[in-house]
Image (tube, rainbow, N blue to C red; front, side):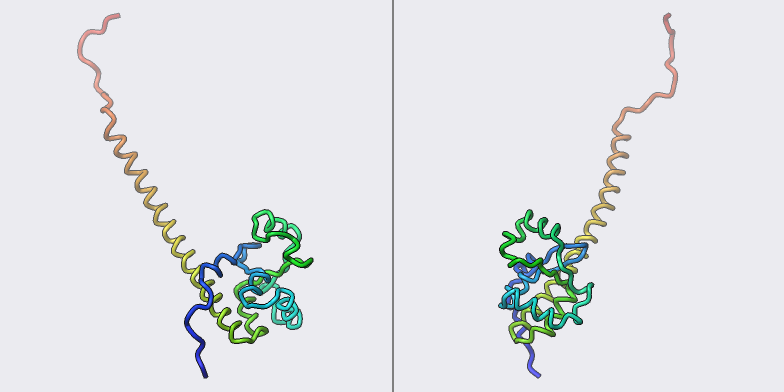
Length: 169
């Protein structure tokens, strides 16, 4: 049993830049995956269609025309022509993992491992950012309370005593 190289084939940044948030899911588009795997998008789609039972709805979704328009407006997709007349498929992390069962070359396996590591790394980074955000929010509240206390201390004392002397009317 040979071990695949632990050396990343593609930089994590390149993979991470191809992960999008669509319908609340982190996904990769079929055209980006095809580029990473070194195959044509139509060939990747054909393999998926031949093995469609491996790709339930939670593993893969097909973009709507509206979602395609949004990706076009954000320059994620340069033009509709790039799509070759088909609406792209988007694969969740589980769907990308399942692609390894239909794309069996050594290169595909190495790419798949790199993609899985990227998804895991992104989850770790997001968790770290959430923890940091919670800590900052807590400190912001403490600083605001401290600032309010200091402001009260710096205000001149309000005299509650009545002045002694005559009042002219």
